[in-house]
Image (cartoon, rainbow, N blue to C red; front, side, top):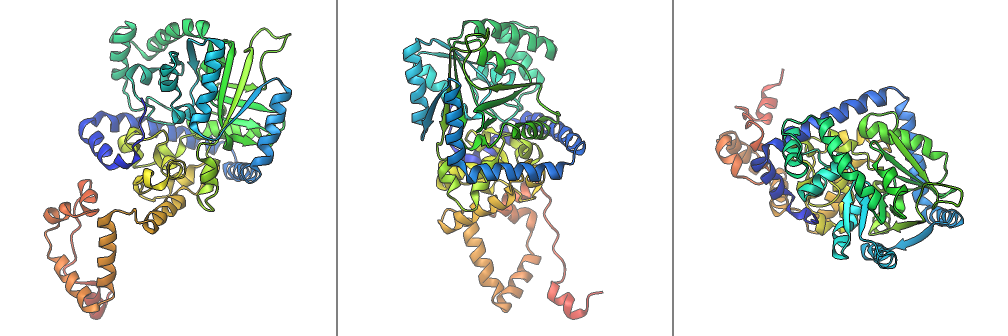
Length: 464
């Protein structure tokens, strides 16, 4: 399921539109539903005030990151947790190596975690001889298909009900006419034995409160709670940017994240985990490991402009409203994080050269910024990475040539008038589709009809 190929975005997007026409329908329908629910949920609160508060909390935590991470470590250790610091993906996976060997792990159940996708945890476990099982229904579906997630919140958003019916019929023996509740029941039955037999439970972390060392997890299915409480060992991979100062901050952040993601006042299940099972407790793991993962985050933080992307709470609201993402879903973006947020995080985590041309996969309409619950100026950061690409010589050659040509024409009045006259007599439907940039634009739009007279001519004649 691994893939790191953001540079192939244009080709992958074109292939999806050409070869998988149902993806646009499935993704468009689901994201519009998500976004409609978000609008309703935002409308029920003083959302602008909430967003200001969330932005300030996250920004404060990021600008005091070292202090809060050390505070969180102390609190976790005091409660019996084991804390590991992972500068790279290899360091994070090394923690798994040691646990698997020491505990003789043979099977693992996983809650939904974008960071575990980023680290390619499943593939690593399989190399160790461990069978990982995704327990979120959407993640379970794409694991059966051998695909990566297509959306931060809805991993199987690109699949239709008919796709799922055929898959479950082939793999779980359900009728081809099964209703969604029947499909969910079949998955629940198959997963129940996995929960009971697993040697290891793996999760991510939505937030980590520094003052109490509390790991907060949001879900709607209860699978994360089972994954973190039934197996004897629980490993939580947590990005260092997920720390927040106070336990009381969780109340607002958990609600705002759920409203932005799915339009719910709060997730159906919220787990607050502070350590392993105590002697007087019936449920919970014998060991609780928290792996604090950098993996490029401090490099992104060092960028004076792009660091704001680290406020992201992984709600997916920017994907749901993005007119570009709605066309292809997430796979075309070539890495774990897709849509507008992926286009500003990937250059920082992977490097701009590796992540191009994702910052250009946007209309810069600003809708993503309008819906972000923590006020990340996404469209401004997209522009920032585009400027960096030009400065580093990574911009498309056709775009750079076109800009130089226009600048040369615009500073020469005679050439500008002659060029304008030529363009007014150009057969756009035929020639426009063969030009860089304009060719792609005209694939989805009718060619403009040029004016019979130039603006300067109209000006000289007097515009009424």
